[in-house]
Image 1 (cartoon, rainbow, N blue to C red):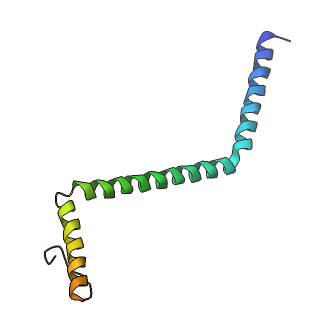
Image 2: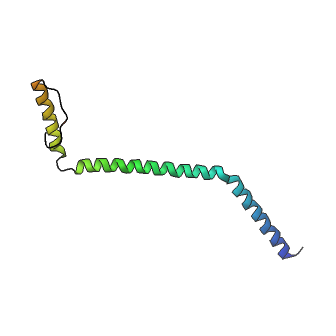
Image 3: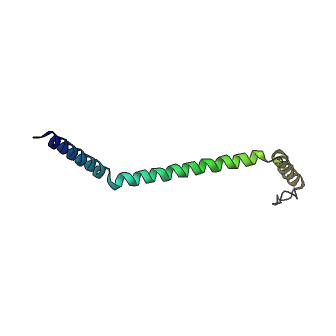
Length: 92
């Protein structure tokens, strides 16, 4: 047996092992990796939305004043015995 024949045989065995690894991974692992990616994207989007909502809420310069105005509106409605109606920010 020649040296080049041995190296050819070893290359062929390596190719077969590589094919077997690819076959064993198959479509199931690809589907799970796609599922994992989708899950990670969903979690990332949820965290981003949460940060945006909280950030915009506290970046509002009138946040504390509007909260106090809503509390005052509830107190006045309770004191006068009237139902609490929905109003916009200008009517509070």
